[in-house]
Length: 225
Image 1: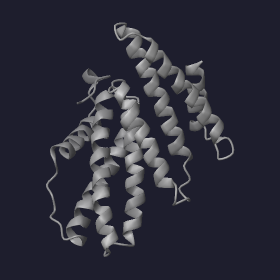
Image 2: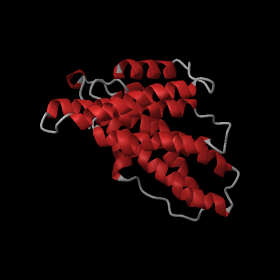
Image 3: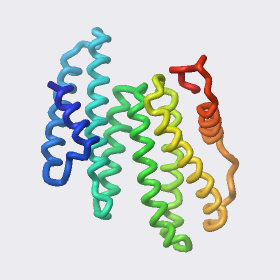
């Protein structure tokens, strides 16, 4: 029953069948799956490790589905609520789902997408505020989204053993690198900061992207991390 609801909601979300008129129905469905999984975890003794861990993974999946629904159906035209909805989606995965499963590529991939979207939203708003104090205040938030998006990207790449997200991670990785380069230049030029050398994490992103460009049949199905 839980998985039926989860599959139903996730598929409808991906197929763009969820809208403002029926959104509450889909959220109610996935909430029922989440509540059932929470009850199963509470009823399963921790000594029954296999079942206990399996239920925790189910709960992580269901929380991720709810977050993804919120993300894909949030209205970017509603400035008053858009970032708040993205933050709620981020919280569901980062603060709840990851407590139950730290080895899921899709959780890290979705978190990367969320931080990238929030980064882009703030980036666009600072284009018109480059000389203002408000833009300087947003600088720390933009930097935080860049840093977290990178770390989640690296984790997604590490956990993507079957290469399910390889193409999408490649596209996002290149985009993150372009943003990082442009942000470093803007920070140096506009906010009187100091241009920084790439951190070990940014260097690792470049290394992974370069490795993915090289065909290596001996490493098929393995993560480069």
